[in-house]
Image 1 (cartoon, helix red, strand yellow):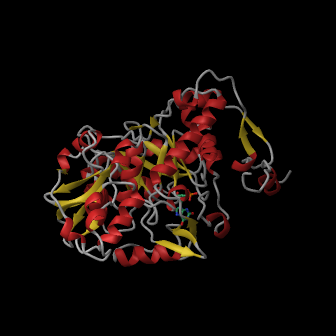
Image 2 (cartoon, rainbow, N blue to C red; image 1 turned 60 degrees about the vertical axis):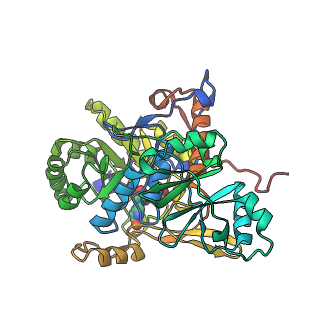
Image 3 (tube, helix red, strand yellow; image 1 turned 135 degrees about the horizontal axis):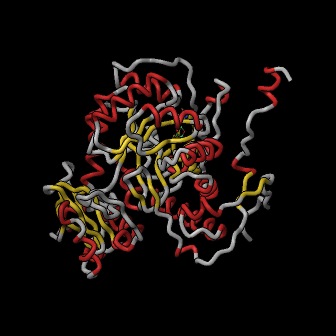
Length: 468
Ligand code: XMP
């Protein structure tokens, strides 16, 4: 066979996520007994294998807080000034590890509207703040019901003092609520309202991941060439995560090798798509604490369409894991791109990933930074690739010194259905992962690597209708 013909007839084959299924294995555990804790990097252990993508419609401090409260980690995107990125990290690090909500009323709010708000939330009291964010006190549902004859009277007439907790003591609020004295407690920082802990929040099953000082874990994205930025984020971020589409590039490898000598936080290299890239990086760079694996697989990626280049996520993860194991290297892999459900995630874990990074899964949540949009009675949020035209335009206006290296967009954007709170989305995904591992008979992620067996089958067809 001629060499060119050979090239097109001999490539590796990667099954699509939709045609690869786990086979059931012998199980001796209930899903709730399965341990899904895992390594994000060599030194950072998470309680769940979920990481949010560093994208400007996904990961800012709000989402990072919610993910860390649930045991995963958010990677703050880099499409902002370094000062903004530092501020985002500080917000996460100063946030108490309890589920706070924006649950407050404004002084001039008509009492009728306040009654509705409390009914909707199912609480008997709510904090009131003034336009500067200072906590003024609380209003009680019972007081309003009694006296709010004309529903338009401003609630400042009904404000009474009440207990609030300043940030360092925020965790005490959980115990206070447990005593049943209040349904909502305001958390403040020097008198300024930060958020509210509600009776519902206090009962929420959360399992935060925290650092040695009891602060939530968080990571930050950088371009390895931008060593100055990395130095400013160092230590505040538990991990510095490389965020370039093609990491297997001599200039990036050289820059990374310098960078790891300048930072003390863990360093995640990526994105890589092949075993060769992993081994080259591991040889050139003194310290790699994790790899982001997959090129062109993201739901908003058009690299395969515009460049004809694609390293499918599960194929890349499996290839990289095999190559590292052959060298005796234990570097955690983050599977990145195209993982849209618990079943996709569990397949990526089963082929050797330690965690799954996702943008699409989180883009429709309350905590994602984009606005809620209503179209035809349905709610959506915007989601866009970091190499999409709108995202690139924002980047160059945010950072006048950025070097434009590519002129053709490699990402697209669109609307994704609104999904409510990130914590409820995470709970559902985690439940799905546990169920899948239960079927596979795996008691933890390493056990899944050992036991998972696959079958290739065409996408399962189901009845398209609704229940009942
Ligand atoms: P999902 O499937 O979770 O993928 O939405 C998120 C991942 O996609 C990558 N990403 C991009 N890839 N062009 C690309 O080729 C882009 O504009 C782009 N933006 C993000 C990134 O790895 C992310 O984690």
